[in-house]
Length: 235
DNA sequence: AGGATTTGACCTTG
DNA sequence: CAAGGTCAAATCCT
Image 1 (cartoon, rainbow, N blue to C red):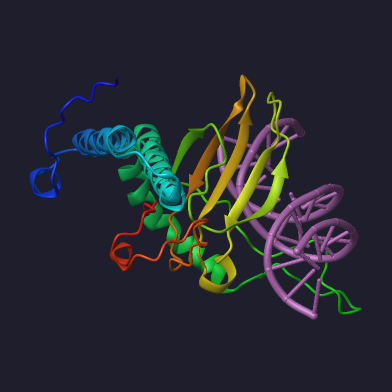
Image 2 (tube, rainbow, N blue to C red):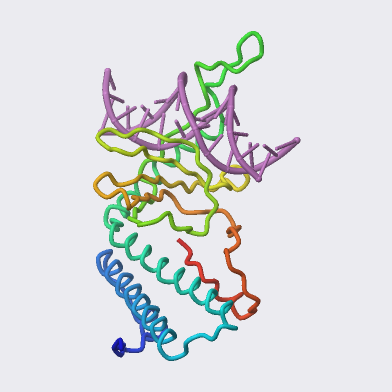
């Protein structure tokens, strides 16, 4: 029988409200600590259910729902930990300051959309000059390694694929589906890791500014109590 | 028909 | 100038 260690209670009042990080490093450590606590609690809760409750045959639906949600919780927390660990808070502070300056020139570019676009005499857009776009520099980004292409809850649309030097697998480029209708600037890059093809390196760029028009979860249960406690974690 | 993907060209950055 | 990020026409899929 699996031994379940007892964890110190980590109620919101005893954790998040009392933490006042003095630096980016403190903040990072605090977030990781909270996530690790949450992960351990979720793991133990799952073990507890497996051992103590069990499921009867007629409870198959409930078991599937439980399996699904516990899996989502664990994966979400695991992803958050990876993101926070790889996120450079100090660099981000510098980037945020710099971005304010860059924003001015970026806005000028986007305001007159396609200033370089020219029409040929026959009315067609010249293929020589496309719209003015800028590669986003210093935008908020973080990366994770995943053993599978987890559903992070957002709707992504592939817009490119590129062979990358010295890598075995191409890099795939995705943008938020709501880029056009809600001007959401979030993008992500997915690339299989050469040394370990079972894993994917996923780089997220920018925050979602679109409304939570998440894809429906694969399993839907009729429980109004969940409405105020969605199982996905805002990334 | 309309949305998603593919893919070659364009564009920025170092 | 090379590498890589993005665009957009062509194509695919439902």
